[in-house]
Length: 105
Image: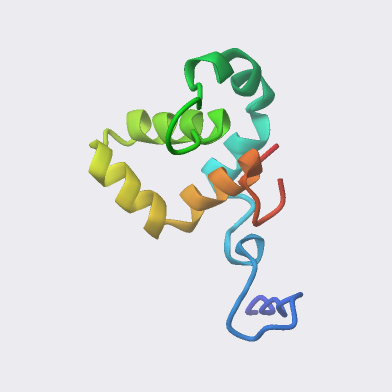
């Protein structure tokens, strides 16, 4: 028997929340729940000062991107491209506290 499709919780037909698109049992989603992201915020904050120019990215985002780049052996360009295209990678970022889906916090 087929599984029932989820009915979007938001009112917009073509704008589903990211949490509604990803499988909560995906290995990257499960891993993201086990990582203590606050450690990266406290320990890495000094490495990313923002005194001049564009504000720095959140430490948790940097940690997540570096993890994905190392794990999947991606170049800088490839990790950015895949991060933009892959909802599981984006979910990691959003759950790291950058807004969007439920807090990877």
